[in-house]
Length: 375
Image (cartoon, rainbow, N blue to C red; front, side, top):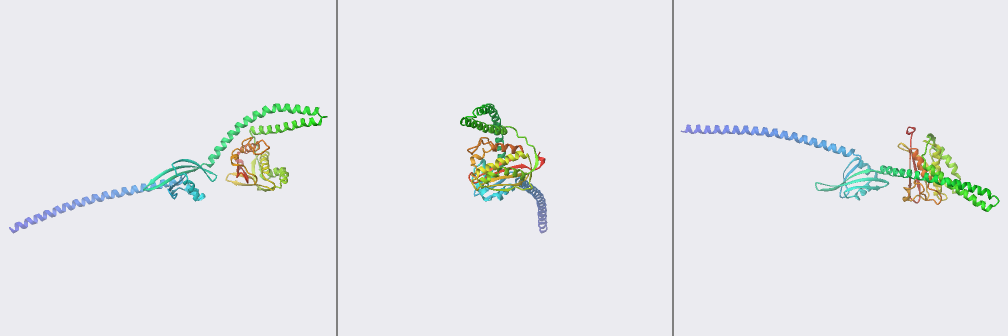
């Protein structure tokens, strides 16, 4: 009986061990499967992390290489993230540029002036993990605006040129008859000095009008330039020699800092006409004991010549009209001088700019492309 009982216990124990072995084997198989699944998940996570890193690196590269300046600011104006283009702006302008952006804290696209530059700014709103802020995409469109303004000016001048030429020809025909009859009248009245002086006054008036018409026709026709290499100082010296007496009369302090070795490609006679007009205008603008200064420098691919005076300046509302014919602040004059200057400079494939505060100075900058390969 005891033996039978022990045999049963052994059988039960054997069955238990067998069951334990089976459970252990299943557990080992489950563990192996779990380990395999875990390894698979780990590799997938590593792959996803690698893809995220690559995507993050790509986004960062795209952000940094963008031509637009991009920045994200929180509601207090603190920089959260920015690209290289924005960093350049920030390094140049400093915190005042952030203050400028904070004034545009509403969604939309704006064109804003800031310190002689024009920026197109696209503003967006974001919220990330409870952080509120603003994104700005900023483009400097100053050069584009200048080109746009220049194009409008050229179109306006072209239209006015056609009109002016037609008017000039219509006036010149009867003017010739007036001059002829006034000359005959002056000859016939040689014994009547009082009446002859009236006829001579008519002749003077006709000559004045004829001079204006000549300027109108010069403005209206295309300028043909004969390009050669010249010393800039020689051109300036010829002009200054002609205007020296006017400077002496007003005791003007004339400072000529033109580099003696500087050479430009230009039509010498037309360029003399340019500087004759500009320096003459400067002489008219300054008071007794005033100052006129000429200097030049190189700006990238341009030769830049500057005529600067400490005269009365040009008011802001007039600056945009300064090269338009018949716009003048002088009591005498037709307002054609600077229009002709503009045409001559444009014919040289150059450009001309005017800066003034409207009260104490005027600076005119002429930019001419450097090198004979331009032609």
